[in-house]
Length: 366
Image (cartoon, rainbow, N blue to C red; front, top):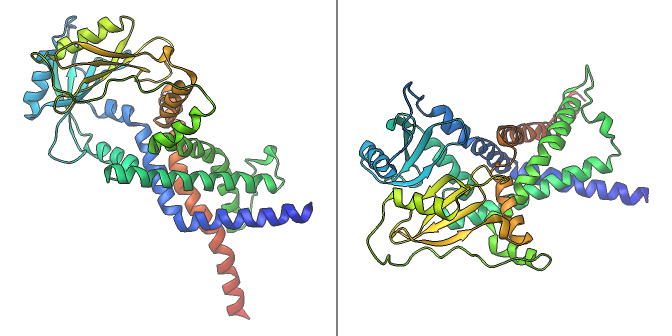
């Protein structure tokens, strides 16, 4: 038994070492960019113009607000982000000539005016890189493969720690006056076991986003799932095109107790997708979607509470991956874990390199 455990530990250590050394930089880049993306709502709020003092306008004409945003940049909006409680700033994401990098116009619902723009182009670039490696569908597949490697690296690290016979009480133990290799081991252990837990969660949930058909097919074998209920995008609108105000009113009529969090405006003749938050939703953007035809007719209402377990599980994976659980606290911890991936790479390389350097010095001295 002891020999089996020793041989298993050597095999796991070898796998963990070389996965980390060969692909560590890629994993660190994805971890760090994921940490930055987790703070996207906070970054948008911090970089948006401050709200001027003044009396609030209770009734906003959203059509006029959209036109004011369009006049600011000379382009039309493609997404609209509504604030959470306590903020009055609505963010219009505008079309841009730069692929996946957009202009952002801030509209204050209190004054009823555009109050400026937010420099979030770098975040748009980061989001597309983290999700798709800036290569659209093919990039999303490669991002999923990187997630698989990150999952393997995390699991082998946990197994290696468990096989070492270490105790939880010594998880944060630090040996004073120790050598560089022992310091690297201590730091690698702490960052790996604490930050690695969130990295494993991020890698696992990424699989549901990068390989949706495969993961849903596997889940359907053990849990009840319904087919996608949202109407497909596309199709020619029958009748005159409605305004943004009409689409918002249609969504609010469909889900009276919902609060709008995001509006996705379509390209061509697709449907308008309006995400809404209801009391009890775990995702900050809401778990419910209303599909509205461009004529203003509601063509689909996707309520989270009416979904079977399998569909709710899939939404939970998306919410976890995007850091939408637990508010700022969860996002901050999630971001810290992403940044820790860079420290894992550095300490891991030191663990491998310092003994070799010491041996080289001894051979030279001999």
